[in-house]
Image (cartoon, rainbow, N blue to C red; front, top):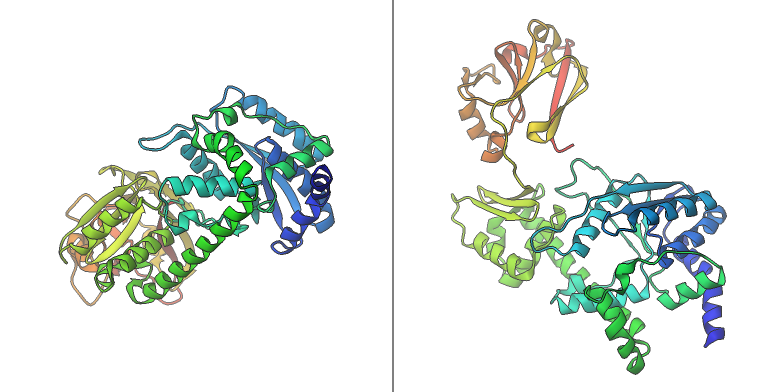
Amino acid sequence: MASSRKSKSSNLSSRAENVLHGQIEQGDHLIVALSGGVDSVVLLDLLATLSVKMHFALSAVHVNHGISTNADKWDKFCRDLCRSLGVPIKIAKLNVSKGPGVSLEAAARDARYGVFRKLKADYVVLAQHLDDQAETLLLQLLRGAGVKGLGAMPIVRNQSPGVLSQGIDSAPRILRPLLEVSRSEIEVYAEKNQLHWITDESNADVAFDRNFLRHEIFPLLEKRFPSYRTTFLRASRHLAEASSLLDELAEADSKSFIISGKLQIEGLRKLDFPRAKNLLRYALTLQGAPLPSTVKLEEILRQLLSLRPDAKLHIALGNIEIRCFKGILHVRPLSTHVATEWQLAWHGEKQLIIADLSGKISFSHRKSAGISLKKLAANPIIIRSRRGGERFHPDCKRPRRSLKNLLQESGLPPWEREALPLLFSGEHLVWVPGIGIDCDFQAAAEEPSLVVKWQQGW
């Protein structure tokens, strides 16, 4: 047994290298998620050597959750370790607190992945291993998860920015090169190479579900079923295949019932309940929304199926909200109170942040398209909220009309109409997002002009 463990330890580097060869390219930037525990320390040690051999850039990130009294010591340990290896490190300090119905573990995990999504790299590399796979499967099973939750963690997965991304265009992929390596193999490698690591005191607290399984259940399970880790992995992969097939079914359904990224409620009514639920789950995933429990998802689906064509629906789901307008499902960040009286002056900036609307306006100079710069220069430029009574003339062939009526005809949902920035030249309304430019301010052919764009989220 000792000889076997030593053999597995000695080829751990080659096993990690084989995984990397199948995923990364020369010049890629990999960031190790370094907690300071034995798993991530071994991963960093492996990648520090492989980065030279395989020609990829390597750095690390340590997330200081601020939960443990030893958090700052772990912070320093990780800095010192990276300094000794010549690996750049970023420290992300958080203040994690759990919300209603959310465990501290889950809150910390969500905060940690929030940090990962914002990093600039090709991959964030995690040290999750074979034992983590087994623990996750059993935890999800005890929580009554479906096939998606019970599926094995993949070696590589994308991080979708989603509806709550606040303008993040892309995020590094998650890479797990040690998924088929057991905890004992990692520990043997660490001891053989005389590595040093920290021990999180909370890992011994069996009040946490994962620790209870690790310390109380799995030792008993191993006595009777010593190969349970690989057996669990095989079962998880079967479930992952089933989940993939369900996604393929939802994708096929989406071609008929998801238009411009929005789910058509009438389409759900054409499917039987389990298939409609599968499509709804898929649509929420596409939007980057957190998936609700099965009970909550079925409740949402029943409300959607019973909705009258002219009825409105508003469901809060964590930090997002689900709304319906004209038979279309909208998933967006949870609305906050929008100040009714605000305004900003524009002095030629390329971009203006509209904090009251959680968005930004960008300005670019063109010719022939946009707002006439000559006419715009006659008066101060103000960006402000709707206050009622505004009139607008975007179509030169039609008379000036009330902005309220124009917005109603535009098909914009009511919540978007109330959160639009308006551009004025003096007292004259010049530009309305989604509606256009006032006839009197539209640039002529070859005339220097300004193109204005509104984007919610930054």
